Structure formats: structure tokens, C-alpha cells
Length: 324
Ligand SMILES: NC(=O)c1ccc[n+]([C@@H]2O[C@H](COP(=O)([O-])OP(=O)(O)OC[C@H]3O[C@@H](n4cnc5c(N)ncnc54)[C@H](OP(=O)(O)O)[C@@H]3O)[C@@H](O)[C@H]2O)c1
Image 1 (spheres, protein in one colour):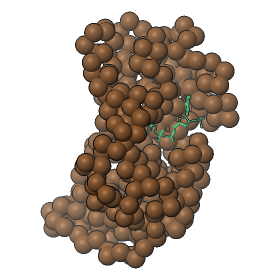
Image 2 (cartoon, protein in one colour):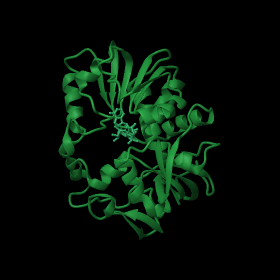
Image 3 (cartoon, rainbow, N blue to C red):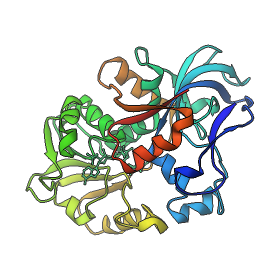
Image 4 (tube, rainbow, N blue to C red):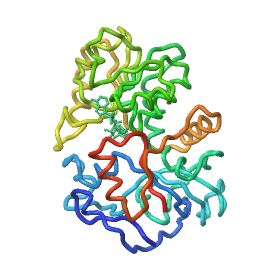
């Protein structure tokens, strides 16, 4: 089968379209013919081996897992003997390492039936970014109806889901984005917009019950200024302003853990982990019309390097999707 693989860390130029062995289904896995995959910030972090500290786990001289990509949607081709939930032909979506490929073999517990009414491209856009938004707002932010929630980075892959999910939870939502993305963020349902080129949300005097930071361009002290006395700050680990490319988000995580011992605010660092229950919750939101994935651009499998370059350096908005 064809897949996008790499042997060494670096820019998108290290990615190659290759012929590789088709994966073989194991007892607890589902073999899926991929129809669409989505690009995430995770892909370029893994591609670059960034931060350097992560290479201790990912592989020192090059990635141990050579095929890139995480999110996929497609049709089940075969199931392992312990898998009872799926049959060949089922339409599914989920997360796996190596989604930029014609086939993936995913653990049963990271796959769910595809939301009815979504195309394969739309469904592929959901898993990682949607799960990040869901866990950030539901599990860490504990968003309640009527609360005021600010999403910093509202027009990005995670942000466009976060605005919609916060609205589905009954919150009053403020989206922070650039001038060109104001209309997009409004169309996701944001009640209020802040154009970050004109206004700094940490200095305008307004307070929020939950601030979900997907950018990392403000210090913890600055973000805390935008919180009510009992407010919760949810950090995605985005941005390198707190750690550089040696330790990346670890700097922010450590700083948040230390600072949260001395301040009354909850400073919470998110680590989104794949879960079929969360995929099911996202499917329900999509099927009830409360969550619509937005796709900025699509690229064929052979153009994954261009797709990653676009996401990494050209300020893509919403999701970038790979079609097979
Ligand atoms: N902790 C976890 O488990 C987890 C999981 C997934 C993702 N993440 C992290 O979450 C972050 C967001 O991911 P993503 O997929 O949404 O990235 P993305 O699609 O690249 O979106 C980033 C957004 O940030 C906006 N932005 C840039 N500068 C800004 C500023 N100064 N103020 C406000 N917005 C600004 C951009 O909008 P403009 O084009 O308008 O500038 C863009 O829409 C990434 O750093 C990613 O690594 C963490």
C-alpha cells in the first residue's frame, strides 16, 4: 500500500510517498481502508521530533513510528477475532499512529462508527481536535450552562470545535482570532469576538469562568488576569513561548503545576488521550447538528508535505484534510 513515511526528523521535505507493507489485523484491532485523514499540529511536532526531549520516547535519530498521520475515516476491511462491534463494510472514524496511508490497523477502543450525515472528509477532521476540545471544556474546564468561556485560538483546528462544543454546553462564548477569521468564528456560534490584532484579552478588564488557551502567546500571569476569582485556565500546551524546542510544553506544564500551589485559580494542563466514548460523544453532537467540522483545504495523499507546511506556517484555519 501507499503511505507517507519518514526516516529522519526535519522539515516536510523528509516525508516521502512510499510503498509499504499493508498492516495485518490482530486480535483486538480493526483493519480500515482509509478514505480521508486529517492533519494536526501533532503531525508536524512528530515530523520534526519537536521538542527534542520527546525524542527520548519517539526515537533518538529518527522516529520509531515511520508513517505519519493520526486521524482517519474509512471503511472496515477486516476485524480481529476479539472485535465484536464492527463488521467489514462498516463506516468508521478514529485515531491511530500512521493514518497517512491507504490502510490502518487501529485498536478497537479508538474507533467508532462514523457520524451519519458527515462525509469521510468531515469525519476524519473530528477525532484528535474534537477530542481535545471536548476534554478541555468538559473534563478540565467543567463548563456549565451560563458560564462565560473564552477560547484563545478560536479559528484553528481545535478552536472551531471548542467554540461549538462550549455553545452546546450552554456557555456564553468569546472567540479570540485574527481579523480575517472573525466571520468564521462567528459562524461557529461565538457570542462575542476579540480580534487579537486589535485587542489583548488579558488587558481589557473582562473576566471569564473558563479560559481555554490554544495559542500559548500569553504568560500564566497574564491569562489569570482574564479569570473570575474561581475561574479555570485550561492550557493546551500550544506555543513554545514557555519552553522553546528543547522541552516545548513541559516548561509550561511545570510552571503551571508549581504556580497552581500558590494561587487560587485552577491552572490545568490538557493531555488529550484517544477514547471511543469521546468519539461517541462527538458523533452525538455531530448528529444532533451541534457540531459541524469545517474544512479549510483538502490535499491528495501525495501532497501531505504541502498540507503540513500549510498548517504549520501559513495559519490554516479550521481543518486541513487528506483525501485518498
Ligand atoms: N494538549 C493536547 O493534548 C493537545 C492536543 C491537540 C492540540 N494541542 C495543541 O493545541 C494547539 C492548537 O491546535 P490546533 O490544531 O487548533 O492548531 P491550529 O489549527 O494551527 O490553530 C492555531 C490557531 O491559533 C491562532 N492564533 C495564532 N496566533 C494567535 C494569537 N496571537 N491569538 C489568538 N489566536 C492565534 C491561529 O489563528 P490565525 O490564523 O487567525 O492567527 C490558528 O487558528 C497547538 O499548539 C497544538 O499543539 C494540544
